[in-house]
Structure formats: structure tokens, C-alpha cells
Image (tube, rainbow over the protein chains, first blue to last red):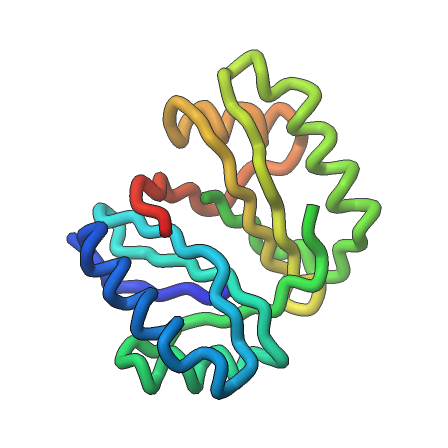
Length: 78
Length: 78
């Protein structure tokens, strides 16, 4: 799970464009972005992915132009 | 999406117990908890729910014994 801050006012189109930019290159790092959720009011965006490690996720996000502010492996899920 | 901090060392069983405690009473606030993800190393837990508002989510979490540290409506999803 990674988190972006400062995305205040993000629109559905902008979220889709950012997500598509990740999807376009994610295979190069064996990352699969699964879902993303955004709160335009507070500017927080959460992205859930399957990935070898946090660094791989960050490399994709950086190359796509939107580095994450936090990345937390979430080995437990329910 | 709500976030809990300070859950360092949380186990799969503890996550399930906490989630089950939410599920047991969520209907009283028209909340539906969908998924939860935990990072035992950093102690962060994310919970995704459908709910009337953030306050309803917090009431359930408080009554279940684990108030959230942050709750962000996430009207945009992809």
C-alpha cells in the first residue's frame, strides 16, 4: 500500500491518467497495481499493488511522475 | 479508508479479531467493512469500508476498541 499526499483537487480523470501511467510500465518491475483510492478534499491517494518489494513500486511511481510519500508492505490482509 | 497507527507486531489472528469485532456491530451504523491490510513492521493498518460518513466508521471502530487515527472519504476509485 502506498500513499501520496498533496493531491488536493484530484479529479477522476487525473486519477485514471496517473494510474494508466503506472500500468504502462509496471511490468518492467514485476509490479501489478490493483486499485487506487483518492480523497480530493484532503489530497490523499492510496494505491494497492502486488510487487516484489516497496522499492519496485517506488521506481514505477517515480518514472510515472508521481513518487509515493509512504510505502508500506501489507503482508496481512483480511 | 481509515488508518490505524501503532499496531506494531499485529498478527493475522489479531487482525481477524479486530475485523470481526467491527463486523459484529457495523450494521448498527450502516457501515460495511470490506477489507483490511496490515504492516506489522511499521504498525500501520488500513481499513476500507462503505459507510454513510467518516463519523459512522469511527463510531464502530471506537466501540470495537480500536479508534482510527485517520479517516479519509475516498470518493474516487479506480
